[in-house]
Length: 217
Image (cartoon, rainbow, N blue to C red; front, top):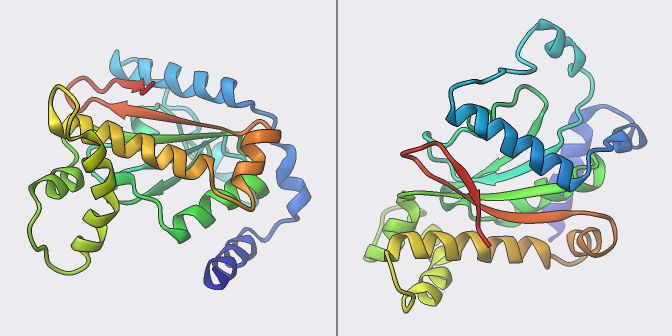
């Protein structure tokens, strides 16, 4: 845990700004979610606004940032958050790992954005045909660190095995909801923000065929 705190302090140092100045983010969780879903609707209909992608925005965020949402997503190249939500530079604070799993360093990054940048919405974004989930279902020995990754997804697989329907989709849903719960219940900081300071953590699923993002109940 000490190493995680050092990492968090390092993130603070990178911003080179006064902490209190970053708490001026007044976007509520509900408003942030609406902005994301409106952006995704534009993306699906190929009517993007391509906001905050110009020189003015580049200069505006050069010394500070006020993202309105945190996206915890998969590293899959087909699921780029700024594009599928039609957002631009400085709008989203993104944490990506294969299978959208969350380790201590990812959790520290989330804590930084919540506590220091004032973000009040976290979207845990699973996606169709996730390769990390598929590898977990297929099992067997994997090279390098891949076994460590699949071991993080195995609990979701075990809980979804008896559900009706497509196993891969069920495990993706289960894994996304498990990570949402993990973030919601994270002690010391995030749980406090969820219970008392307006932080909302939601699960969502991205359809590779349509480009549509839908909430997972």
